Image (cartoon, rainbow over all chains, first blue to last red; front, side, top):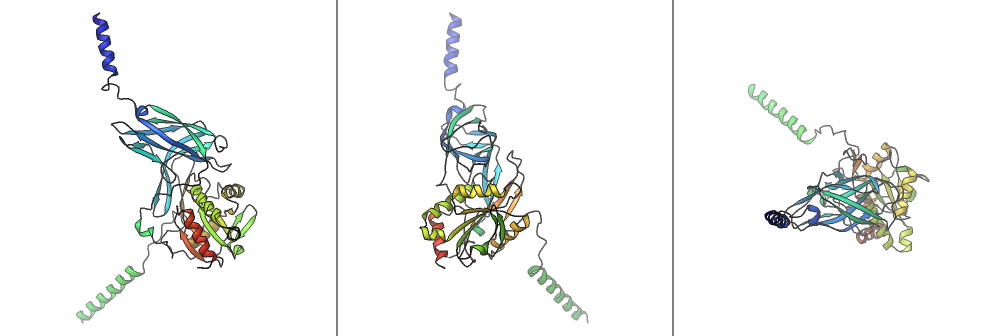
Length: 166
Length: 201
């Protein structure tokens, strides 16, 4: 009887919010994901998505995987005085109650060495792993992006207006 | 006597200082290919290779030519630029389109073959022609338009990347550089720039 009571108490405590705040994967949602359609013969492309974090604490995507390419990496673009520089990033932070938007010209999941040509409408299941080891899988359809988002503004203000001719 | 020497010394130092301030330029860093963005573009003729043979800018005299430097391993910026450009081309009427040509010049001749470039350009729009050449030919063309590019090893499994300026250069029917459009210029603005160049503005 005593044992059962202890076990029950422990079970209730274990399921309370204090013990089970939920993993990063429980709290972060992947919204409107898609993969960019690229010309046949092209073997790299980018995947975009908006992560939203409903949790009280910040979370980070530390890794990404997918079956359509041999390697998957996290990258961003930096616009330094007009030069577009693409660089790997070790993680993507999603602040508590905030979001991280992976979109053309900025952060993206890079699919490297595509195993086959991706066609419009194909589906790529992407798995992202968070800092606490939890992971989340979502489907990203291949989309032909025509109405893309502009690149980040150059950080060098001297060059911002230097090229405009009227 | 001493006073004269002193004045002469001051004058000499002033001249040296003046020369240092106005004329002395330390050797530029040779590690980067291409040129710094500070160089003012003059535009001009160039010859590069396509899958169908050599193409010179002067061959396209009478047309408005949009010149863009990039490479096909670029998973995001180049497809975005070319998507915007092709949307702009789709806004032109038949006559305007017939007088417009887009050149996608690859700064990565090692990986971008002529056949690949032909496919790449056509994927976006039939009026986009993919070109490349020897590192020397590319550097010459880039210099004329103020484009810069630099190969970088970022440790990515995708291999090296080529940092590059992502502007689109608008050349008028007389072969003169008419405008430089920043990356991300909306298609409507690009179409406007093409029309302005067609009308010789």
